Length: 163
Ligand code: GDP
Ligand code: MG
Image 1: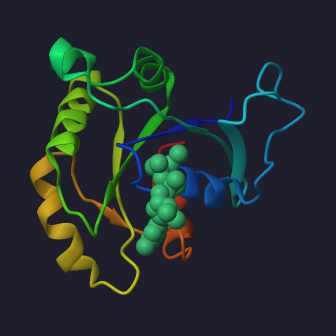
Image 2 (image 1 turned 180 degrees about the vertical axis):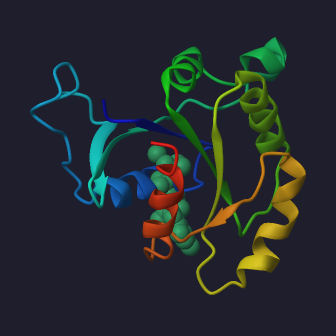
């Protein structure tokens, strides 16, 4: 079985841009995965001889009035639950936001394997840009630029190290 990597994070952090990088082509929809062929949120990629599936997600707007339990859309929570690993994407230019903290809390509760990914770090010093994200309590952040393609290979290697 190919491990499934699920991309989560608040809007505009670069999930879809990273999805395209990790699946290499814009129409990475694969004919050999029954049921997934018509879902543009799934794609596949490969690092060396390790194939993987990637799932992009949306719908992470927090519903404040319903409280923290509803911070993630039900579908996304289900995707997190069913994932082999979750990539939590944050924006290195904006820094840690309140919304990031809510998502981080949900992810900690999920008990899933989480890989914290700091995007939009092109032209920035890795140690400097990642420093503040340790406060999310999700371990070592991995700095990338989805747009420029920086460190994507390393990210994929890191994501698949357990598989
Ligand atoms: P999503 O809402 O999380 O799926 O984010 P998108 O992938 O749609 O990207 C949101 C915006 O951030 C777009 O304007 C992207 O071009 C931009 N973006 C994505 N990745 C990067 C990056 O690595 N660096 C910079 N500077 N901008 C990025
Ligand atoms: Mg998107």
